[in-house]
Image 1 (cartoon, rainbow, N blue to C red):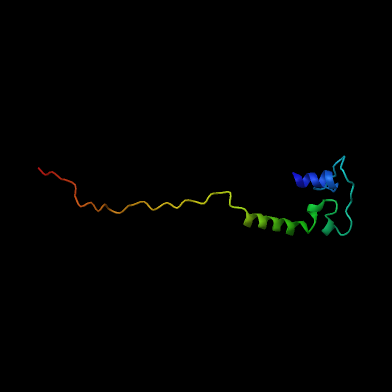
Image 2 (cartoon, one colour):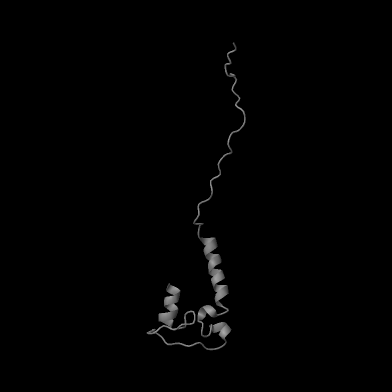
Length: 92
């Protein structure tokens, strides 16, 4: 939300190809469209992808996982009981 607000209102650059009415600054892109994003805006720049990948990597390695680690449960005991007293069997 802050990215879109900053682009649209504060800096006055196109956001996904659209310009906002009543923006604070009125700017326009200069130079090669690969570096400025042209009419698409800064997210259309070739420089945006490596910056976003860097941010993702930093967040991935600096923040703990939101999912708790799985608990390792001991296996079920399926071995026969080592009871020294066998069951009492009545014969007739």
